[in-house]
Length: 254
Ligand SMILES: [Zn+2]
Ligand SMILES: [Zn+2]
Image 1: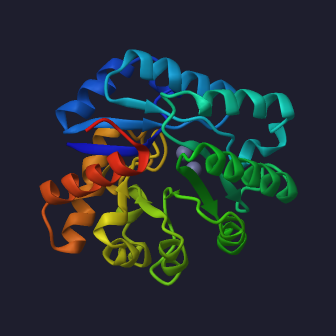
Image 2: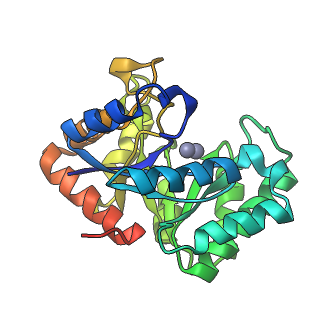
């Protein structure tokens, strides 16, 4: 059993063949997916999918790109969804200073609000971090007792220790398969097995063999295989370990 810890299968690009995508995922051994919301509307879609598709688990949150839309009304709705028993995590949220689609101050305020909510609800926080290592760490450190995952970890081994010290899990995506990303593979070798997760972040970031095409949960197997090769272990052993980690972190059924 492989667990895709971060998938956006509600995207329009899956509308024509979503059932086939899920069937292909199952055929590849990817039988569980965390379906991650990035806005009020997409978080609602996560819950709709989780009602229909076995093995999918919803989250609710406001992406840093959409931090400008993080109004009191939007937050009330995200909080309502996060409070529900089905919701397995708060987010995704975080900071993205690469795109800067929302102003920094709005991103920081949105991120802090989610961190407080995750603490209040005792649910894991899904953190997106791009070109924002220092500020991300600062916000996480402000909120002692947080647990969660650095999703789509793209940094190297040098940036890992503070996240591990904070107790966070580290999730790797297709980025780990791209030829030039040796620094990211070094990180994938360095994360303790009990903190490791894998994801697709689909429809984005297809692994190298499909780079530039639409990504899908079945390809989580490619990510896992590459990390298993790097760590000198088997796909089966690492699938077991990462699925057990996801079960523990997100409180999934055994
Ligand atoms: Zn993200
Ligand atoms: Zn995402």
